[in-house]
Length: 135
Image 1 (cartoon, rainbow, N blue to C red):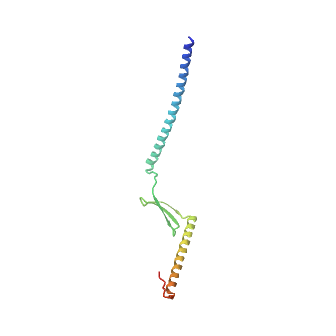
Image 2: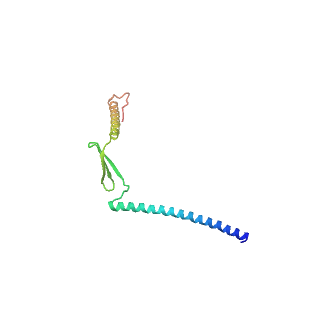
Image 3: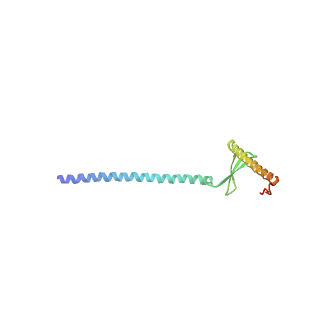
């Protein structure tokens, strides 16, 4: 072989090695992609099996919590079906917050009564210099 032929074959050998490395890299990328897609399908299939077996599925629905202070319980009711989803006891923290709200209501009522009493006193007070209290 001549030097030129050896150089051509060496160049071709380098290109073959590069192409082989590229094919190996593409194969790894495809394997990874395949594994991810297969995993997604497997996960979905498992979820569907659970739903078919239980004849139910988890989904987001609107609920309303109702506090029954006299029974010391809270019920969570689905708004779409009216079904009671859960019931539990009122926590101490929730009861404390209710007491604070009740205290605020009492204070507001007391203030309103005080204002009403002040208004009544003004109406019953004698008019000074032809002025009369008007509400």
